Image (tube, rainbow, N blue to C red; front, side, top):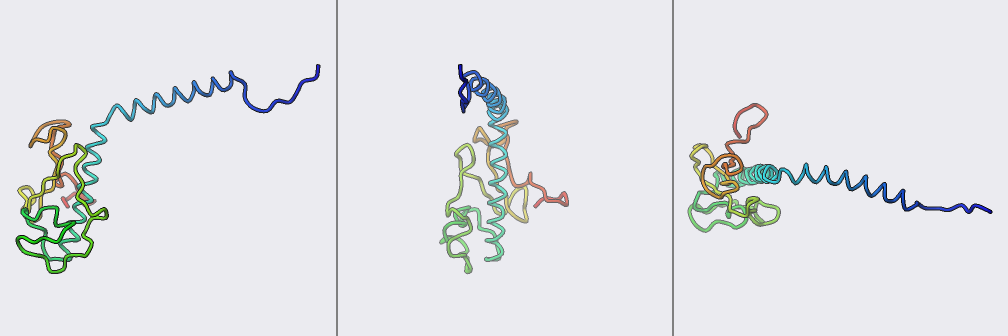
Length: 154
């Protein structure tokens, strides 16, 4: 009998590869899915830093941060209340032209002047529970937690 040269994989080879990929996917999935709240808290910190940078650009253009009354909306719409900025940047200060919500679908809180940063502003999320204070996943996340390379607050 003549043996033909077959190209491709046997059923057993395919099953072995599928089993190996399934095992790898399970380990990766468990590691990623096991920490969703940690991922949300990290996302909130990143969004707070991005909003902080936009607020700093606003201040450079207008000489002051938006008031608490003007809020973060001042980053996407020219304020019409309080001190109206003279040099408000056409198109706003956020790339998507909308203020993001925190990872729990709540609004970010903004106070200017801040309670924790009296010379600047407080920008924060109330965390998973949406309520002030809390511990663990429910703890507030704010710009007072971010530090620059020198160890001081931004």
